[in-house]
Length: 488
Image (cartoon, rainbow, N blue to C red; front, side):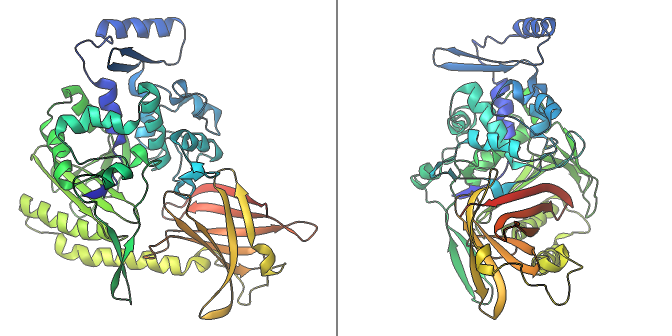
């Protein structure tokens, strides 16, 4: 059994909202009545839930157009007031809120206690919107956590139980979980993840990841045997979902990419699935990735064909999956000019460029740095210590030296209290300026992120703050500047 990290929680939200029951109070007549009443009283939106015996029914009066703040008003606050009041469920599920990826600030614990979905949703207010809402597709795992919190608020139940009752049990997905504890006690073993150490010629075992705060953003632990049952349901449009739900799942909401090539058409984003045309055939695809496990899923509704691939190689599984799955698809389609033979070289080049960018982080961030760096204005030992930011929490920088370059100043902070355990490594550039590189703990395949940093020294020559200009290097989009105050 493999961990599956595919963000398809939105599909479950559609099924929860639209699931039909014989005694469902939300009839067409009632919905018309509710909408008329809401319009008469000038209410932007309303969420309604009913408990009837053992059944729970929920209905969003405006469907996907329901503003999130009308459901979880105290928790969902953005820095832009208009966005707070108007960003809808559909905006969140379509990755069109303008909120960027802030995965470095995704906690598993806060002040020594386990973090909750509510904690993460409330942390969203600490980040600026990188883009205007509804302008551009921009992936945000936090927004799928927001949707998870919405479902739990409406149903009064843990999301894993909702999924089990609504989807997994009806489809016979008996070895699918949203809890690492449950998965480790399953009747089938949980696959261990490994990373290949270049130069060491060996595999290193990677730790299991807790999925409690990942939730609907990709916290499903499953197997290909179970997941093909989900794909069969989607491909053949079968129960337990209605025709309306299946149509909802397939309907595009946002332009994903206009780039084309290798027989791939422009891409649109539906409910957790990218819709495109591959070799002239309508296809839905999604990848999922952590630093331990990676997934790739394609399905072709007209061909009644789909492929699921799950890999347990940290950092490289998606590359192998793309090559293998592409061959399967192209052989099925009997394309005259297959692309898979050249795909391996293309992906190796991409990986090499990514590694090179990480190695050249200092030069990329500070292209005009002097040939002879200016020393830091204070002793390096004074830069070490504990720092705090409301969005990122507390961590401690420790002074180290490079084994092969003893004169190089390096500050390192290990963060084990986040979903993806991280090592923050500061390399001195010149004066107050530092290059921040982030690696995932236990997986050094490549630098995950790098950002420009700067220490701020007070008039008393004491270190006051550390400033980081977070930028999505791949998209060249600002994620905002954060100040980390030195507290010890």
